Image 1: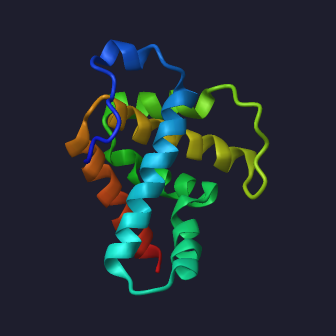
Image 2: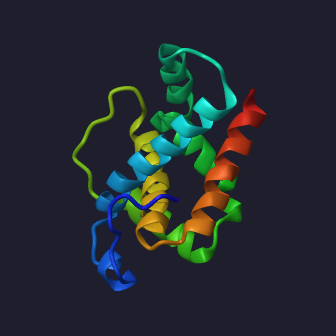
Length: 138
């Protein structure tokens, strides 16, 4: 991964962050990965890229992907997902159920945590699993 902004130096600093902070970062990391994937694998115009990207990043899609990759996560990763899923969030989802939104927050928390703790190889493995699982649907 390209490190444009310096990430925290130690895991203990990341561990003191709110799971919603992990999810905030994870949302961006995941969306950037999906956008790059689509740019590299399709030859469509930006509007179509946006429409295709939504299929991967909307809350329902993230919740579905999490359900599929869940058994492949380590115990620690499952704990991170649970913390993200159970974090108190006062945001009401517009285009998803509350449950989908909670699970997508857990998914994003995992992505953000792996990114912030510089676990880039594992992050890459999980992101690639996400693509594989999503493509199985098509």
